[in-house]
Length: 321
Image (cartoon, rainbow, N blue to C red):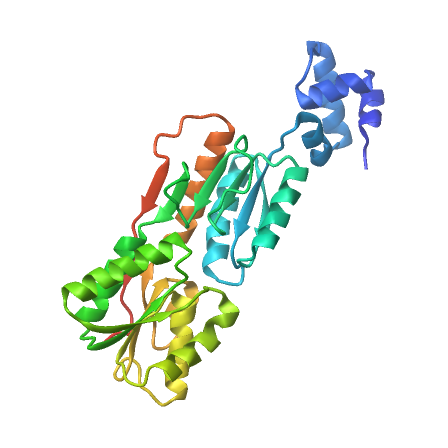
């Protein structure tokens, strides 16, 4: 590996001159700069970004906190973040916190050691970074956070409620996601507004997590808790598919006996049979636009829209009548 000392010797300048050129700090003459740049190109020198970040107290790295990387929704969101970041010269450090506050704290400390330039969080929605570091919430917006990109979950809930009613739902189970998550509260509020408007017969089945590894157990508990129903509004696509699987195991036909609607529109929702009717969230756009907002904050560009809500839409397939 080529060292900064070798670059200096090749260019015929001091190590300090090479360092000032790399870090764009202090005066470097035009001719000396040309020599250093040529030496870097000829030798194929790659600067140590960690060392540079320690020197400059900043970096070209941004942190991304996700609640559960095994949920297919979040890799798509992360792809949007990474695509915009790389197009603009930034690298992404990923922290999979698994809805664990201790893990979240650990990742934030790790990010700080690398002088992260900014942070995107789709995790708890709690700011755990000092105020001097640009911070944008993804997916889980909160009223007290200045910058956020999220889906209009109230509208998404309304669309789900309308769809199940239009499909003739008579005895409806509403799976309420964890109410500590603002989007889950908004989604439930939208669903209930539509069901109450229609004076529908429904029951709420509370769940305290979106974690993928709890989906099958949750579906089993739903069937143990409720004996008679014809429709399920699931908290997300993973849980909807778990309910479909459990229903089929028990001999129910979908959608003739039990109809189901999900939320997210993940890839495998369209690959299953029957195909899952769902509310599509623009996961990739959330990540991409969130990264743009963060980079604008890092580079001190004006951000006109500080709280952005993207529109969900109904995707009709085979799981509703």
